[in-house]
Length: 94
Image 1 (cartoon, rainbow, N blue to C red):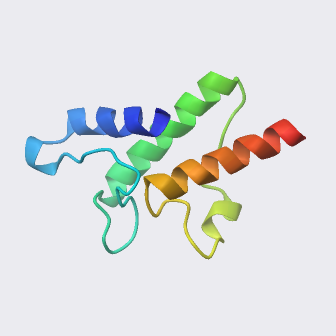
Image 2 (image 1 turned 180 degrees about the horizontal axis):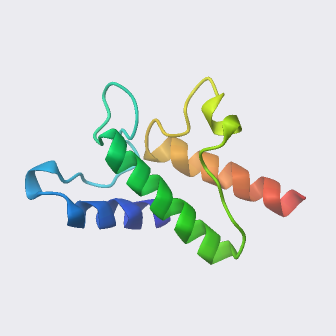
């Protein structure tokens, strides 16, 4: 729901022809991306902010770990969701 809210907030800033429909398969990054780089940055910042507020602890999604993966966690909404859940599970385990 946090990612969907960030995409919906982005859509409010975009002209109608550029808006995207939030879905698990929405391509965020790469050659087939539905977002441009500036839009992706906006979504990531909104997601990080929402996660930080919800868990009262800073959450960074764009660290070396994310960037060094074979498959980017920013490929699509599903990959980003999986990455966030992985990060949150690690926080709970520690």
